[in-house]
Image (tube, rainbow, N blue to C red; front, top):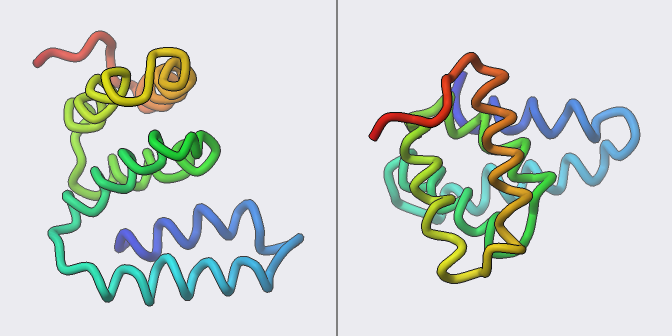
Length: 117
């Protein structure tokens, strides 16, 4: 499954029944228009997505997109590296909820913590 398909499916689980029109707009902008304008490798796109979600405090969206990133070329170590850099720029209090979300997602996937590396 492509990044686009997986991300759209994750959002559809939340919005398809209650907000189909919003889902259509989100899919068009985020997964067609925006992605077609950005000429970067998929891994770089996914790492930047995780970073900007940290920056804008988009925890709910981060919880949707981290599994997509992990399924599409971002290693657990890569995801944690983005997270480890964030307190320097955002402050620990803003980043702590993302540590919990990341650790919950990784352990639910059977990934042992702490990570090596």
